[in-house]
Image (cartoon, helix red, strand yellow):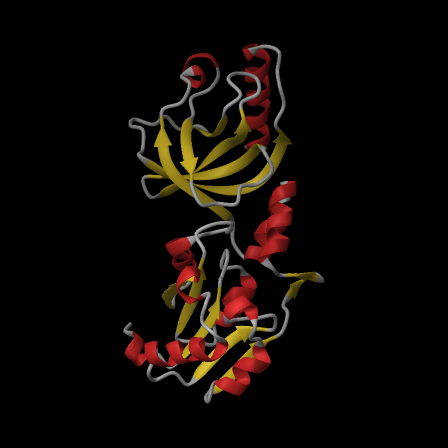
Length: 263
């Protein structure tokens, strides 16, 4: 889709593309996503994975000094057929957030739709609320508020070598640009060759061995013929917090229990 045919847009950071963001997306032809490159549930272009409509990106640094009037001018220049703007009730724009929904209604000549706060079981659906549940390891609530499982992706790297030899074989992944959940062990699904397979994932500092941070995934009941270069992991349920073990034998015994619980 070209900007020249877009008549309606929703504006926001769309951090995580959660259920409240999906409500805004239902109203428009395209999303105008304000990108900052950090601190997001799901950053950058990955947001476009969770919507079927066209996504346009404005980097915050390129618009942060625009007045509310200049920002509306930019929108009308970039979207010459623009007739409708949809925003959330707490939307602010312009330099130092000097504009709000009332400012938008005054400055924009077309229709402005302001979506009221959306809740789930009396919990307001905001990215900061979802992050708070991630920090607690409450994956069930994260899934409910997002409207989908939380996914992290990244490049597979070489690990310590302990897994295959002394514990269980794992894929070691580097996640970049994600808000990570509470350190510990999770029941997960891992995308291998276009198929989601059962897995168990540890993320946190390896306090029993080298102390380094790691994201390690063990594929349950499946032997991999080749190591993939890139994987995605769905967080299904929290199993336990990170814990130090006195020996590798104790750690392996716990991992076997974790796998059984994940199953």
